[in-house]
Picture 1 (cartoon, one colour):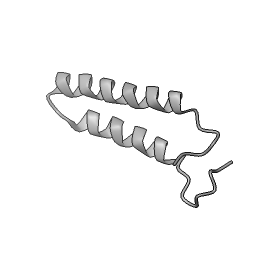
Picture 2 (tube, rainbow, N blue to C red):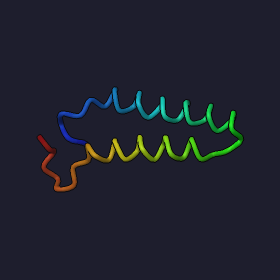
Picture 3 (tube, helix red, strand yellow):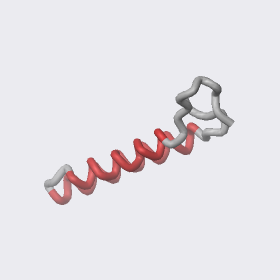
Picture 4 (cartoon, one colour):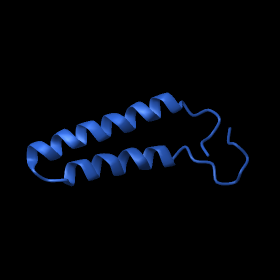
Length: 58
């Protein structure tokens, strides 16, 4: 669950940008490293909006 003040559209757009950009870099470099780094960072950012106590956040 994400905090109530989360802009899920922006998070989704950022995640897709990381996926697509990482895929392009991985294809160009013949290395999955850039894709893995981009997705790891994007997922970490999404996790920063997670609510773990069940309160629904701010």
